Amino acid sequence: MKIILLGPPGAGKGTQAANIVKNYNIPHISTGDIFRKNIKEGTELGRKAKEYMDQGNLVPDELTCDLVASRLSEKDCESGFMLDGFPRNLFQAEYLDKFLSEKGIELDRVINIEVDPKLLVERACGRRICKTCGATYHIKFNPSKVEGICDVCNSELSQRPDDNEETVSNRIQVYISETKPLVEYYTEKGKIANIDGARDIDEVFGDIKNILS
Ligand code: ADP
Ligand code: ADP
Ligand code: ZN
Image (cartoon, rainbow, N blue to C red; front, side, top):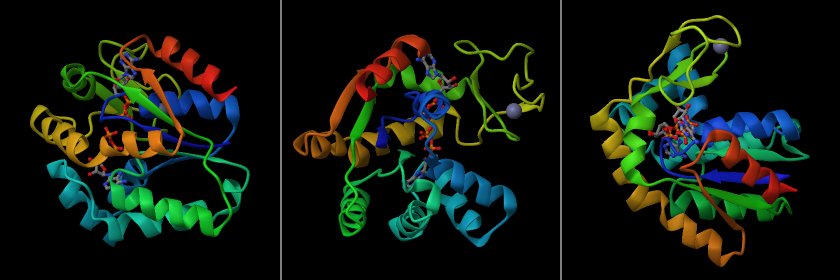
Protein backbone atom coordinates (compact mmCIF):
# COMPACT_ATOMS: atom_id res chain seq x y z
CA MET A 1 0.00 0.00 0.00
CA LYS A 2 1.37 3.39 -1.04
CA ILE A 3 -0.38 6.31 0.52
CA ILE A 4 -0.04 10.01 1.24
CA LEU A 5 -1.59 11.76 4.22
CA LEU A 6 -2.58 15.29 3.35
CA GLY A 7 -4.06 17.93 5.63
CA PRO A 8 -3.33 21.17 7.46
CA PRO A 9 -1.07 21.34 10.53
CA GLY A 10 -2.90 19.81 13.46
CA ALA A 11 -5.40 17.91 11.30
CA GLY A 12 -4.41 14.60 12.85
CA LYS A 13 -2.03 13.17 10.24
CA GLY A 14 0.56 11.95 12.74
CA THR A 15 -2.11 10.54 15.05
CA GLN A 16 -3.77 8.60 12.25
CA ALA A 17 -0.39 7.56 10.86
CA ALA A 18 0.35 5.82 14.16
CA ASN A 19 -2.98 3.94 13.86
CA ILE A 20 -2.36 3.02 10.24
CA VAL A 21 1.14 1.71 10.97
CA LYS A 22 -0.21 -0.57 13.71
CA ASN A 23 -2.78 -2.07 11.35
CA TYR A 24 -0.96 -2.16 8.04
CA ASN A 25 2.71 -2.54 8.85
CA ILE A 26 4.13 -0.02 6.37
CA PRO A 27 6.88 2.51 7.08
CA HIS A 28 5.71 5.92 8.23
CA ILE A 29 7.73 8.65 6.54
CA SER A 30 7.20 12.03 8.16
CA THR A 31 9.40 14.80 6.80
CA GLY A 32 8.69 16.84 9.95
CA ASP A 33 9.92 13.94 12.13
CA ILE A 34 13.05 13.55 9.97
CA PHE A 35 13.84 17.26 10.32
CA ARG A 36 13.24 17.17 14.09
CA LYS A 37 15.55 14.16 14.42
CA ASN A 38 18.25 16.07 12.53
CA ILE A 39 17.78 19.10 14.79
CA LYS A 40 18.11 16.88 17.86
CA GLU A 41 21.26 15.29 16.49
CA GLY A 42 22.71 18.69 15.54
CA THR A 43 23.31 17.88 11.87
CA GLU A 44 23.89 20.46 9.14
CA LEU A 45 20.46 19.64 7.68
CA GLY A 46 18.87 20.14 11.10
CA ARG A 47 20.57 23.51 11.51
CA LYS A 48 19.31 24.69 8.12
CA ALA A 49 15.78 23.28 8.54
CA LYS A 50 15.30 24.78 12.01
CA GLU A 51 15.51 28.32 10.67
CA TYR A 52 12.44 27.72 8.50
CA MET A 53 10.53 25.51 10.93
CA ASP A 54 10.78 28.04 13.76
CA GLN A 55 9.05 30.58 11.53
CA GLY A 56 6.45 28.09 10.32
CA ASN A 57 7.69 28.32 6.75
CA LEU A 58 8.44 25.45 4.42
CA VAL A 59 11.95 24.08 4.38
CA PRO A 60 13.31 24.66 0.82
CA ASP A 61 12.54 21.95 -1.72
CA GLU A 62 16.21 21.25 -2.39
CA LEU A 63 16.64 20.17 1.25
CA THR A 64 13.43 18.16 1.27
CA CYS A 65 12.97 16.30 -2.01
CA ASP A 66 16.26 14.36 -2.14
CA LEU A 67 15.74 13.35 1.45
CA VAL A 68 12.40 11.78 0.63
CA ALA A 69 13.71 10.14 -2.53
CA SER A 70 16.53 8.45 -0.66
CA ARG A 71 14.19 7.32 2.13
CA LEU A 72 11.76 5.87 -0.44
CA SER A 73 14.65 4.01 -2.04
CA GLU A 74 15.27 1.99 1.13
CA LYS A 75 14.31 -1.64 1.12
CA ASP A 76 11.48 -1.40 3.64
CA CYS A 77 9.53 0.84 1.23
CA GLU A 78 9.39 -1.79 -1.51
CA SER A 79 6.06 -3.20 -0.40
CA GLY A 80 4.53 0.10 0.61
CA PHE A 81 4.90 3.38 2.48
CA MET A 82 2.94 6.17 4.04
CA LEU A 83 4.08 9.73 3.42
CA ASP A 84 3.03 12.21 6.11
CA GLY A 85 3.73 15.90 5.46
CA PHE A 86 5.17 15.36 1.98
CA PRO A 87 4.45 16.61 -0.64
CA ARG A 88 3.59 20.07 0.64
CA ASN A 89 3.62 22.12 -2.54
CA LEU A 90 3.18 21.61 -6.27
CA PHE A 91 6.91 21.32 -6.94
CA GLN A 92 7.22 18.48 -4.42
CA ALA A 93 4.12 16.71 -5.81
CA GLU A 94 5.51 16.81 -9.34
CA TYR A 95 8.93 15.70 -8.10
CA LEU A 96 7.32 12.74 -6.34
CA ASP A 97 5.28 11.82 -9.42
CA LYS A 98 8.41 11.79 -11.53
CA PHE A 99 10.36 9.77 -8.97
CA LEU A 100 7.61 7.16 -8.62
CA SER A 101 6.88 6.85 -12.33
CA GLU A 102 10.57 6.33 -13.09
CA LYS A 103 10.48 3.42 -10.67
CA GLY A 104 7.17 2.11 -12.03
CA ILE A 105 5.44 2.69 -8.71
CA GLU A 106 1.83 3.82 -8.53
CA LEU A 107 0.28 5.62 -5.58
CA ASP A 108 -2.84 3.97 -4.20
CA ARG A 109 -4.51 6.73 -2.25
CA VAL A 110 -4.15 10.29 -0.99
CA ILE A 111 -6.03 10.59 2.28
CA ASN A 112 -7.02 14.20 2.79
CA ILE A 113 -7.94 14.96 6.40
CA GLU A 114 -10.09 18.09 6.39
CA VAL A 115 -10.39 20.26 9.49
CA ASP A 116 -11.69 23.80 9.72
CA PRO A 117 -8.77 26.21 10.33
CA LYS A 118 -10.64 27.56 13.38
CA LEU A 119 -10.01 24.27 15.21
CA LEU A 120 -6.38 23.92 14.23
CA VAL A 121 -4.78 26.43 16.57
CA GLU A 122 -6.20 24.73 19.67
CA ARG A 123 -5.21 21.33 18.33
CA ALA A 124 -1.63 22.30 17.58
CA CYS A 125 -1.06 24.44 20.68
CA GLY A 126 -2.36 21.66 22.95
CA ARG A 127 -0.20 19.03 21.29
CA ARG A 128 2.41 17.30 23.40
CA ILE A 129 4.95 14.87 22.03
CA CYS A 130 7.24 12.28 23.51
CA LYS A 131 10.80 13.09 22.53
CA THR A 132 11.84 9.48 23.07
CA CYS A 133 9.23 7.47 21.14
CA GLY A 134 7.37 10.16 19.18
CA ALA A 135 3.93 9.39 20.60
CA THR A 136 1.51 12.32 20.25
CA TYR A 137 -0.98 13.53 22.85
CA HIS A 138 -3.29 16.48 23.36
CA ILE A 139 -3.76 18.12 26.74
CA LYS A 140 -7.55 18.17 26.26
CA PHE A 141 -8.52 15.85 23.40
CA ASN A 142 -6.09 12.97 23.90
CA PRO A 143 -4.35 13.31 27.27
CA SER A 144 -1.73 10.92 28.57
CA LYS A 145 -2.74 8.87 31.64
CA VAL A 146 -0.28 10.75 33.85
CA GLU A 147 0.07 14.43 33.01
CA GLY A 148 3.30 15.19 31.18
CA ILE A 149 4.42 11.54 30.99
CA CYS A 150 4.30 9.27 27.94
CA ASP A 151 1.96 6.25 28.30
CA VAL A 152 4.17 4.17 26.02
CA CYS A 153 7.66 4.72 27.40
CA ASN A 154 7.30 6.85 30.57
CA SER A 155 9.46 9.65 29.19
CA GLU A 156 8.63 13.29 29.71
CA LEU A 157 6.35 14.98 27.19
CA SER A 158 7.22 18.28 25.58
CA GLN A 159 5.76 20.92 23.35
CA ARG A 160 7.16 21.52 19.88
CA PRO A 161 8.73 25.00 19.64
CA ASP A 162 6.63 25.70 16.53
CA ASP A 163 3.35 24.85 18.30
CA ASN A 164 2.71 28.39 19.50
CA GLU A 165 -0.17 30.53 18.31
CA GLU A 166 1.87 32.85 16.09
CA THR A 167 3.78 30.13 14.28
CA VAL A 168 0.73 27.90 13.94
CA SER A 169 -1.19 30.76 12.35
CA ASN A 170 1.58 31.20 9.80
CA ARG A 171 1.69 27.45 9.14
CA ILE A 172 -2.04 27.50 8.43
CA GLN A 173 -1.54 30.36 5.93
CA VAL A 174 1.32 28.47 4.30
CA TYR A 175 -0.91 25.39 4.11
CA ILE A 176 -3.68 27.37 2.41
CA SER A 177 -1.42 28.95 -0.19
CA GLU A 178 1.12 26.16 -0.83
CA THR A 179 -0.36 22.79 0.18
CA LYS A 180 -4.11 23.05 -0.32
CA PRO A 181 -3.78 23.22 -4.13
CA LEU A 182 -2.61 19.61 -3.91
CA VAL A 183 -6.16 18.56 -3.03
CA GLU A 184 -7.22 19.57 -6.52
CA TYR A 185 -4.05 18.11 -8.02
CA TYR A 186 -4.74 14.65 -6.58
CA THR A 187 -8.49 14.91 -7.17
CA GLU A 188 -7.76 15.33 -10.88
CA LYS A 189 -5.60 12.23 -10.72
CA GLY A 190 -8.48 10.30 -9.14
CA LYS A 191 -6.47 9.53 -6.00
CA ILE A 192 -8.10 11.65 -3.33
CA ALA A 193 -10.21 10.41 -0.43
CA ASN A 194 -11.62 13.28 1.63
CA ILE A 195 -12.18 12.65 5.32
CA ASP A 196 -13.90 14.84 7.89
CA GLY A 197 -11.18 15.19 10.53
CA ALA A 198 -13.31 17.20 12.96
CA ARG A 199 -14.55 14.09 14.76
CA ASP A 200 -13.18 11.69 17.35
CA ILE A 201 -9.84 10.11 16.58
CA ASP A 202 -11.45 6.64 16.42
CA GLU A 203 -14.20 7.76 14.07
CA VAL A 204 -11.66 9.31 11.71
CA PHE A 205 -9.64 6.10 11.79
CA GLY A 206 -12.81 4.09 11.04
CA ASP A 207 -13.20 6.05 7.80
CA ILE A 208 -9.55 5.54 6.91
CA LYS A 209 -9.87 1.78 7.39
CA ASN A 210 -12.90 1.73 5.10
CA ILE A 211 -11.01 3.63 2.44
CA LEU A 212 -7.97 1.38 2.63
CA SER A 213 -9.87 -1.91 2.66
P1 ADP B 1 -0.70 16.67 12.32
O1 ADP B 1 0.30 15.54 12.21
O2 ADP B 1 -1.69 16.66 11.19
O3 ADP B 1 -0.06 18.00 12.50
P2 ADP B 1 -1.41 15.49 14.93
O4 ADP B 1 -1.80 14.09 14.62
O5 ADP B 1 -0.09 15.70 15.56
O6 ADP B 1 -1.58 16.41 13.61
O7 ADP B 1 -2.57 16.13 15.82
C1 ADP B 1 -2.49 17.46 16.31
C2 ADP B 1 -3.02 17.50 17.74
O8 ADP B 1 -4.43 17.25 17.73
C3 ADP B 1 -2.42 16.43 18.65
O9 ADP B 1 -2.29 16.98 19.93
C4 ADP B 1 -3.45 15.29 18.62
O10 ADP B 1 -3.44 14.54 19.84
C5 ADP B 1 -4.75 16.04 18.45
N1 ADP B 1 -5.73 15.31 17.60
C6 ADP B 1 -5.48 14.51 16.55
N2 ADP B 1 -6.63 14.05 16.00
C7 ADP B 1 -7.64 14.59 16.74
C8 ADP B 1 -9.08 14.48 16.67
N3 ADP B 1 -9.69 13.74 15.76
N4 ADP B 1 -9.78 15.18 17.58
C9 ADP B 1 -9.16 15.94 18.53
N5 ADP B 1 -7.83 16.07 18.63
C10 ADP B 1 -7.06 15.40 17.75
P1 ADP C 1 2.47 19.81 11.00
O1 ADP C 1 1.77 18.68 10.35
O2 ADP C 1 1.96 20.09 12.37
O3 ADP C 1 2.55 21.04 10.16
P2 ADP C 1 5.13 18.68 10.46
O4 ADP C 1 5.86 17.92 11.49
O5 ADP C 1 4.60 17.92 9.30
O6 ADP C 1 3.99 19.44 11.24
O7 ADP C 1 6.06 19.83 9.90
C1 ADP C 1 6.74 20.72 10.74
C2 ADP C 1 7.54 21.70 9.92
O8 ADP C 1 8.56 21.00 9.18
C3 ADP C 1 6.78 22.48 8.86
O9 ADP C 1 6.15 23.64 9.39
C4 ADP C 1 7.89 22.81 7.86
O10 ADP C 1 8.68 23.89 8.33
C5 ADP C 1 8.76 21.57 7.91
N1 ADP C 1 8.36 20.58 6.88
C6 ADP C 1 7.83 19.35 7.10
N2 ADP C 1 7.59 18.72 5.93
C7 ADP C 1 7.97 19.58 4.95
C8 ADP C 1 7.95 19.53 3.52
N3 ADP C 1 7.48 18.46 2.85
N4 ADP C 1 8.43 20.60 2.84
C9 ADP C 1 8.91 21.68 3.49
N5 ADP C 1 8.93 21.80 4.82
C10 ADP C 1 8.47 20.77 5.56
ZN1 ZN D 1 7.17 7.82 24.66
